[in-house]
View (cartoon, rainbow, N blue to C red):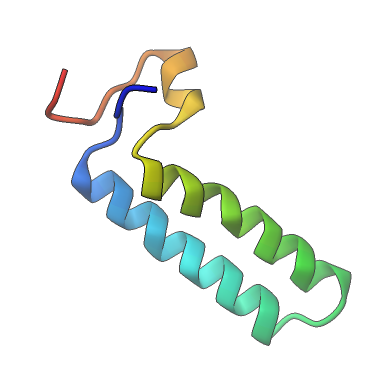
Length: 66
């Protein structure tokens, strides 16, 4: 897996992941909150790894390393 995300892209994903997971676990109760937190794991993993499978499929690369 090659890095295909730039630093700003990764930072935005990590912030979005934190918000989704935090709101899902603390504010929204029940299955909706768990689902929101689970969805937040996706941007967390892609932000930490620097690789987005969807970017590969549609040919986007925001990384400076090419």
